Image 1 (cartoon, rainbow, N blue to C red):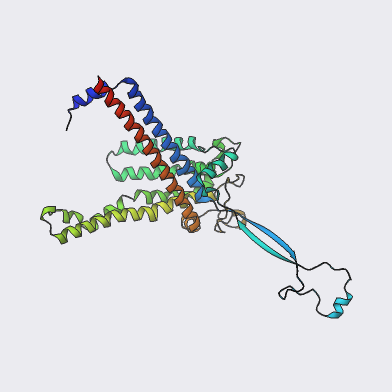
Image 2 (image 1 turned 90 degrees about the vertical axis):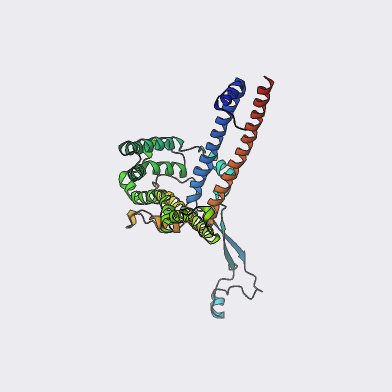
Length: 362
């Protein structure tokens, strides 16, 4: 049953003001809660998971040698004559064993990561001010290109690349704030120098290009498979073979976009965070353990290197254990968001039932 627009407006206006206010408040709380979850777990914890490399602790175990053990080490004498010349009181032989214990990653647990941040006097919402500043600056820059060439995707895409590349130092600042201990410096004093930022310009530019190409790849596949040509024939006039071919082409187009996103966009975005982390100033202390040299790939300038990490090297040094840990962070965040959504849908439904009962009563 369809309602006229006037009837809908009249019914909405018939809802008591208290219930309308409750709807607005509930919706605002939903937006706020989901935004906090996405920022804390999807940005802060995920970024820490992208750079964390669990430390290892070496324990030296010493035990006396059993003389009856056939595998025991030989005494430091080659013959009886040397043994007779030795002092009568000798230190007993001991054997040493090195036990290497790998610490559990902090980011293996969402709650554990938040507790770790709080124990270091670091807010789980750290870097929020820089994110807002980045969003404002990005919007202003891209708006200029939208005004100059409205509706031109090529110019607007160029504007996005200019904005992302031009704000490299601000992106690095946010990453460094997230992965380092709280600092007494003002946030304006924590910007890296332009000389250091130049080392991250090319990876930032490449990542922006990869992200912009996300809708282009399936569009190219769409044209290459001539899907338009297949659609010229009405569906009801297609043979079963033609329908199967059309369905297969559609699946290939959709899969190409998904595969490109998972295999190119996501890895490059993770690698870019690691590139930024490699440029963390030496006077900044990481809040989670990670190898500043990334397995020897980063050679400081003082040792004859360039002090930077390439995008491909940054991804290859991100081992499978860390990748699985990051996927788990995203999966847990998605589950939390789903649970919050279900709870608030139940709240909205309950309010709607109260509103309907109130309207019918009147």
